[in-house]
Length: 197
Image (cartoon, rainbow, N blue to C red; front, side):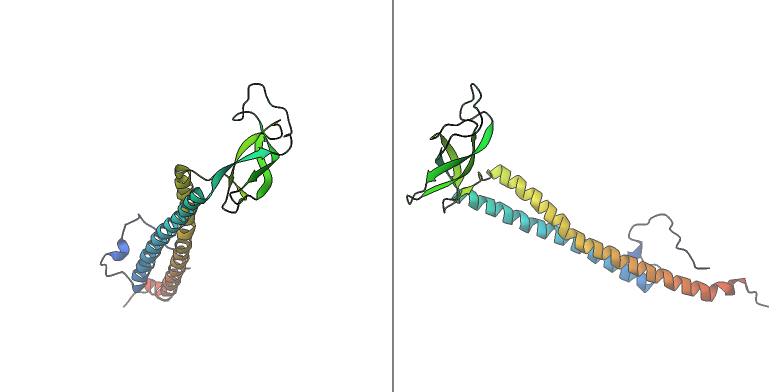
């Protein structure tokens, strides 16, 4: 009958203590676990920080090079304007707008405007250096929050790799140890019932 592992109360750092019953496999398992935890921590922190810096840097560049431009509605926007809703309020719909960039070329595109806006109504849009429509760039605080969230997700994802590898390695070491115990038990177990005489 194979020997089943007995799990008593959890003793912290038992693999690092001196013990005449400690085997080489226990020491190897201790180093594997320590390495897995260190790699998990380092991979998560470094990958998360790198991703956060990259995102925050990209959003900062957008704030520098993207700029607002006044565009004009090219044809009456669908819908009807609500009473008392100025250019800032009211339902927003997609409409075709046109704008001129610094070199004098005219661009057109779709932008959100107040429902029922008349032809020629001015609307502020954001463009990149080539004059193409872009979304409003994130503010510094929005960029910081977005970078922190993405950095956290990337860090957790990167940390999962060494963590799972450590769990797999530990499971294999434990199975190997249990197989050795079973082999020793099947060899020595029957001798316990013998009497010397």
